Each structure stands twice: as C-alpha cells, then as structure tokens.
Amino acid sequence: MASSVNLTVKLGSLIFKNPVLTASGTFGYASEYKNYMDLNALGGFVVKGLSVNPKKGNKPPRIVETPCGMLNAIGLQNVGVDKFIKEKLPLLEDVDAHIIANIYGTKAEEFIKLAERLEGVGRVSALEVNVSCPNVSKGGALFGKNPNEVVKLASSVKKHTSKPVIVKLTPNVDDIAVIAKAACDGGADAVSLINTITGMVIDTKTKKPFLANKTGGLSGPAVYPVGVRMVYEVYEKIKVPIIGVGGIYNSDVALQYLMAGAALIEIGTANFTKPDVTIEIIKGIKEFLKVENIKSVGDIVGIAHSV
Amino acid sequence: MKLEVCENKRIAKNTFSLKIDNPALFDASPGQFFMVKINDFDYPLLRRPFSIADFSDRYIEIIYKVVGEGTKILAGKQKGDFLDLLGPLGNGFGDIKKGKKIFLVGGGIGAAPLIYLSNTLKSMYGISYEAYFGFNTKDEIYVDFGKTATMDGSSGYAGNVVDMIESQLDENCLVLACGPTLMLKRLAYVCYQKKCSMKVSLESRMACGIGVCLGCVVETTDKDFKRVCVEGPVFDYREIEWQAL
Image (cartoon, rainbow over all chains, first blue to last red; front, side):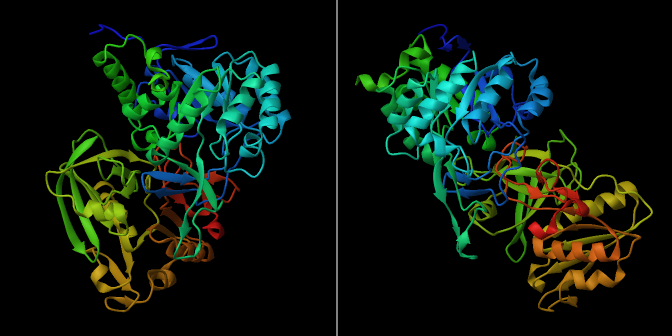
C-alpha cells in the first residue's frame, strides 16, 4: 500500500494542493464558511460571479427544491468587482488556497474590464469566465451557446490578463464539445463544466411557474450523470484540463468525474446541505487512492477512457 | 451536529412538538432558527429552517406543521433517532427595551418562536406583554397562553387576529410578530396607520441558511434585497417592501 498519495494538480502555472474546489454561487465569498471548515484544506474556491457594477439579482422566489436537486434563478446578485476587492478579499488574506474569480458581463467590454480590474490583484489566481448562467436576460448562456462568441470572448479576456483563464460551459447546447473546442481556440487554459441545466417547476395551486424568473438552473445530485457524461465527451476532444462540476455530493461522484477526464472538480449545491462536505470528499479521494495503491490523483484522470 | 431526538409528539392538528437533546454548547435567542437535515440521504436534499419554540438546559424544542414531504418524514422520527442540526442561525428579536406596551402576535405555525420569546421576556427581562394568536380552527391551537382567534369562530374571537387587536394598537406599542405572509402584510398596514413599532420574523425558502445561496432574499424599502437567513429572519417592519411580498 502506498504510504502517501499525491493529490496535487497543475493547471497552467498554478499548483493546487488537491483537486477539490468549490463552485461559484455556492460558496459566497468563501469567508462565510470559515466557521464550518478549514478553508486551507481546499485546493481553491471559485467565488460568486462578479460583474463590473453591483447586481441586485432576480426577484424572489429564487429557489425551489426538486427530487435530489434544486432549481435556482438568483440572477447573479453580487457586490461588484470593486467591493469584492476592497471588502471581501481582505477577509481571505490568511487563507492558503487558490481564489478563482468568476466573472460575468453582458458584453465583451465588461469581461475585459473585469479582467483588467483583477489583473493587479495578486490574491486572485485565475479567472473563470461565466458564459453559461441561464438566469440572466443578457450575456450568460447567450454567449455560451454560440461557438463563435466563445472564441471571441475567450481570446479577448486572454489578451487582458496574465492569469489562467477558465471558461465555464453551459450544458444547454447540442454538443458541448464544440463549445469546449471554441473556448480552447480562444486560448482558454481550462474549461469547467457543467453549469446548471435549465428547468421549470409549476406551482399547481397558482397555476404559474414557481420561480419569479419562470425558469431556473437545476443542480444537485440529480444532475451528476449528465455532467460526468459531458466531461467524458469533452475529454476526448480537447487538450486543456477540464474542471468537472455538477451534482458532486460525495467522493464516489468526485472520482467518477476524475475518471471521466476532469483534472479538478468543483463542489456546488452540496455545500448548502453539508458545509464541510468538501473535507469529506478530499478525505474520500485520498482513501480511495491509498486502497487502490495509486500514487497520484493524476493517474486516474480520464482512466475510464482506457477500458 | 447530530443531536438526539428526546420526544416527537402530535400536539394539535398536523402539528408536532419535537424535543431535541441540548448539548449545552451554545446559546440561542428567540427568533433564531436551525437548519435541520431531515434524512441522512439525499431526499429531501435541502435542510429545512425551523424556528426555536423553546430552548432550555435540557432540550431544544421545535414546533412544526406537516405540510410536505420533509415534514412528513420528520413526523416519523422517534426518541433515540438522530437529527443533523446547523445553527442557531440568524438575527432574532434582539433586545427588547422596557417602556413600550408589548404585543406578541402570531398566526398558525408562526406562533412557535413567540413561545420561546414569551418565556424569555418573562424570565430574563421581567417584561410583561399581551399575546394574541390566530388559527384557522380550534383543533389547530397549540399554545396554552394568550388570547386566541379562529377564522371559523370555533374558539375565542371569531375572525383574524389582526382585526382582534387593531383597536388596541397605538404609537406606544411594540408588536413582535410571526405568521403567514398575508397576516403579516395586514398587520404591517395597521402598524403603519397606528404609527406603532413592530419587529417581524419572516419565513422564506432557503437552501443554505448561512448567507451564500442568496435564495431567501426579501425586497426592502431601499430597493435592495436582504437575506432572511443572515440579515433576518427578524426585521423591523419598516425595512420590508410589503407590496412585493
């Protein structure tokens, strides 16, 4: 049995101490979780999607539970990039984990502005470009469904930052591999998938859609097989690392994503139910590798393709 | 944290009292809440927010109504079972200053946090108050103090609790309220008219309870959104954009 296992992962110039990150929109600005877990244990975290100006978000109701999942339409409520830098980042000064800023704009210029604004901020290790939010009327998934837009956007963000650029993809497309390739053509250093799956719940009492936004994004354990399948498909088509996300709630599902081809994973909705779930998942991955006598987590990335 | 169920019994129509062993590791103030995981597995997925109906050295009491899948499963929990609780969370009713005439006003299952509040007002502050509770029918009543109103007239005042107390309210009153949105809306309207003060505990669907999911927000009069779980659940009623509710 191997005495120790290597959990580190490289993404561009960055080294992550383990492959477990938290997904944007499910971990606030990270300091909220300080009471519940040791943030230093994480490979990193992706903070709530940031826009140039503060964003109020959608009217409530914004969430509704579904079998083994939930539908949300928050509408990217956030404090804006300036307040994030001034007020939220200092709270994380002593935290030894990568901070990834998820950025969102309604047009390319806004993404560029965000990249420029964050360029001098050393504490932010990478940018995750959100071209996949299903719950906003402008930008978001409207970019992410069109490969030409994705190429343009990825390359323009890339031109304005020295940090690794991750493009977060929507599953609400015909062929996600086409979009992933477009992100790579634009120079993306990694892609993360999947964002939420568009859905709707109707309140039979009022006979109207339950959410004020009508549709929302489905997340939680219910969606993980869709995410695993998409990571598997994309892995065969692109060369850059994949960050797997969607419904991961225990180490077994985390391992499935890694075996499908994800180099890193993001934990989302599970943070709501179990604030320290990420710790359990890191432990579980480590335990699995030990038992299987596998020296490095990298050795199982994409392993499901070799059979 | 996983805590042991001491008792889970029906106390009124579709209404249960759940007493959970208190590990005496923390304090909790009236109006705060716990996020309770109903099952160890993933259905229902999300924790459910429950206000604190009483909090003593021995146990934490939650009073809940069976309204859906989650609460139906909760009703099946027995002495010796364990439940995973997160909390206490949120801002409660806070300091209650003497000097105003205090009214506790609750509706339906919303009366639950007012029980703990009333016990605290009595024992800690020695403050006197009047309590009024509204229910649909007599068999839904689970409080054993204060005056009650029933919509069908089967017990106490016939009609809704806001009509029952309206004439007593003026600028020297402080109302502490919790209940269904429609009741609170009407109460807020009356309080505006009578220029009286009110702190109100709101209910909302929430996924996390700790301020990150942003699912539970309410619209406020400054045209912003506030999180019920962190900035609330107890608000000054003047902060809330009642038209939006």
